[in-house]
Structure formats: structure tokens, C-alpha cells
Amino acid sequence: MNIDPWNLDVWQRLVARYRQDTMPHALLFSGLPGLGKSRLAEQLAAAVLCHSPEAGGLACGKCKACQLIQAGSHSDLHRINPEEDSKYIKIDQIRDFCDVMSRTSQLGGYRIGIVSPADAMNVNAANSLLKTLEEPGARSVMILVTSHLSKLPATIRSRCQLINFNKPKQEVAESWLREQGVVEDAGLLLGLAQGAPRQALAFSEGKSLAARSEFLKDLEDLRKGVQDPLTTADKWGKAETERCLNWMYSWLADLICLKSTSEAAGIINRDRLSELQGQSKKIDLLNLYQLLDGVQAGLRQLQTQVNQQMLMEDILIRWQEVR
Image (cartoon, rainbow, N blue to C red; front, side, top):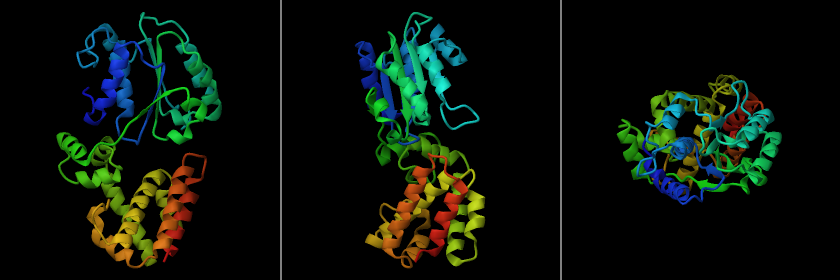
């Protein structure tokens, strides 16, 4: 696997640290979803465990270690993710992880542990990881991956080397998307993905744009009074809440931009400019800001045990009533 072009600097710094034998025992990869953090974590783990890495640092893909990784059976590579029936990483998972990471490498090299998403650890799980972060075993590297850095306790953050993943320049991202076969809507997809290329690619490969069009039509019907907020919330508030709130956030941000400047440059939903211009003339700017704050607060609440349908109902009622 090639390194994503926007992550080359990060990769080169990490490879240099490894070759100088100064690799931190705990790395914290942080950035927007879709920037390739988990991918790079896997590439780094493979490179560190590889017996014959390439000149650029990538794993060779041919040695015994690489073959074991490809088969999912390397004894010194350990991954922790939320269990299928939960969105949280539980304390028992972290205890087992810490136990494994404290042991000696079975193949005589490094032991690598990847925790993703690290912000899925509940409080007890995060606390149980602290001792291992403070007293790591010899020749061990733990990589924590998160898209929500603020959700991690300060005690965890302070014990890791923070690696920030930044979104690439627009031209770099669009060029990469074209290489992946995304010819149309690259700019729109990147806008909806907040500039994260792999998120934009995922949007292009699924039915996201079609679902977004349907959701925006429902928003317009709510404004016209031909759609009911509770029915709409029931439709979208179970499996699609986060995606819908992100679409709504971008829509409100565009309305605010048009209301404030009347300039179309920088508009995310560029394919719906005429609709945005029409709505921007009918809604008070202060009310838009207040609703935007409400949507942002809703996105934060999704990381808790909030009732998603009730959250959607509240926001859609406010959208229908805003003037």
C-alpha cells in the first residue's frame, strides 16, 4: 500500500524516528475522519515488524512477518476495537491488551498495539490503560487513533506523542480523487467530507449523495409545511443521525455565508446554490447562528447515550420554525 500523498511528511518523520531507534512508545494519531490515520497506523505497524523493509520504509510484503500480518495471525500485532454489540471499548478489552503488551515479543522484535478509535474507550477502560502508558514494556509501540481528540482524557493525551493529521490542499485532494476514478463532483464531495479525501472517496462509492438529496428535499418540505418533523425524524434519526446533522451543519453554514457576504465562493453545497440563495433571503441571520450552534451541540451529544431520534426531532422542529 502506498502512503497517502498528504501523509508523506508524517510517514517520513516516523520512519526516521524508527531508524534512529527513538520511536515513542505511545503515539496518538489525531485528525478528521477520512485522512488515513488508521491506514497509516497499519502501515507503520507492518513496517516496524517487517524483516526487510523497503528503502522508503514500507513493509516488503514478502517476508514471514508480512505474510503473518496479511493472514491476520502475527503474534506481536494486537488491535483493539469496539466489540460488535457495542460502540465502546470496554475495560476487559484494555486489561487483556495491557497484559499482552507487557509480555516479551514472541518473534524477537517489537510488539505493536493499535487502539482505534481510542475515544471509544469508556472512563474505566481509559484509566486502566494509564499504567501501561506510564510503564511500557521494552520494544513496544502503542498507536492510539482518534477523530475526537477532546474526548480523550488529558491523562491519556499527556502520555502519548501527538501526531496531527492535516487535510491536504484542495488541488492535492482532487488530484488524488481523480486517480481513484472520481471524475465528477470531486469538489462537492470534498466539501461534504470537510476536505478529507478518503471520506470523500467513501461518499462517492456509496449512496451518500442520493441520500443527501433526499434529506435536503425533506428539509425543504419541512419549511413548506408539507412534511412533519416527527415523521422526518423517525425516518432519519435511527441509523443516519450523524450523517444528517453533518449535512445540516454544512447547509446552515452555507446559508450564513450567503446571508453575510452574498458570495458563492466557499459554498459547500455548490450543486444547490439556487435553493440556498432563495432560503437565505427568508431566514434571520441570528436565528441561523443559533440553529447552527444547536446542530453542533447535537453532534457532540451523539458521542453520549443520547436518544438520537429525540435529538433529531428537536433540531427538525427548530428548523421548521426558524424565521
